[in-house]
Length: 504
Ligand code: NAD
Image: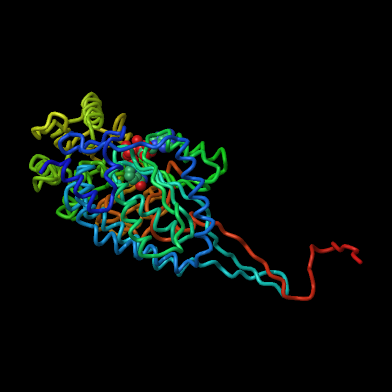
């Protein structure tokens, strides 16, 4: 069966109307072969505005539904996702080129956040606070916020939506989602899966609780500028964040910005090298280097450099590259030609700075329009130029270090620091790395790689953006507004000292 026919079968099975993926103006291609697999109708910026208005009306009804009942909808969504896991995981592999386990793993993250959010729906706690006034009680109450805008990147086409949406729904918000223009099919599939959950849930769920806006940047801009959207959670490149952040600030809207990651690891003299090797290989080559948490810079202590590097080079030379649909390869395709060209440009720049490159060439998959690359390992004389930027491709820059304090400085010397890890069995090094003067990233790990965050912890925290946070921990607070309430149960009204009004 052709990939196009298989895609159409999956979408139909998931309940997506054929009109939503055929005959439209936005061509969808699979990076696996480069062929077009669907034509999706895109929405205009004006129609996007109308959908947002409708979502605002939905919010006004949804905020009155008790939070544990809202949790029931998310519980049903989790059930529907479990039932659809194989289909949706396969669709992620088709649309983004992730290998099978990663496609399924992404859907599992959606299921996990639903479970988390169901529990959360009974734990949206505020504090009761000691007040200085006699006969008074002071407390804080968390209320639903409004329409939550979600803008997502191509490389996590479904999980990012769910990290935001599951929290937003239990918090009493409606959601308007602008997926990447490269991945509209998985978004349509999620919309259909959500509609199934709503059908089982019943009429408490208002129409328009979730809107999916298929379109490109101007649709994203309409969402960012709409006055009825008090929070936009935007995931994508740092370039996108720089455009979205000021627009939101201009109208005092909240932003959760999850942007690029130029993530680093440090391998110390006492590291368990077998463990480090496995974590480095997975963190740097997994998802063909197209994760925000991909390991991109590696600092290796001079005493273990010669023991680690030949083994790492071997891992790079032997890793299997190929179609995620028809092979067991560990590395699938890059999303498109532009990604491949950027990779080659970065490798040329690294070479010009004295970098010694292993791998990096195009892999011939037999499809002229598909872009696969052998992951590249680049031994650099020092951290400079292109090493300081995120290139969204499988490139790992390796540098030797001597002094621990100096390597911490180097580690923190990039803008887009999102995730980080250290490999050591020395307690002092490990704890220093996690301390105030250690890694400055939102995610700092010991003896585990940079990629593969769990939903229970707040995800993200890219330092340049002030640290967007979504999914676990207390990330839910961004999706609600806090009111401080004071109740006077005394017979007096204490005012500021020396103030009294003469009232008859
Ligand atoms: P991208 O920035 O090109 O696009 C992301 C989304 O933003 C798309 O939906 C796009 O249409 C939209 N967009 C772009 N410009 C916009 C604007 N001016 N206004 C409103 N919307 C706009 O990113 P991409 O290529 O899809 O994804 C790769 C990037 O995303 C990498 O840099 C990666 O590190 C990052 N990423 C970060 C995280 C995280 O959680 N920190 C997760 C996944 C991906």
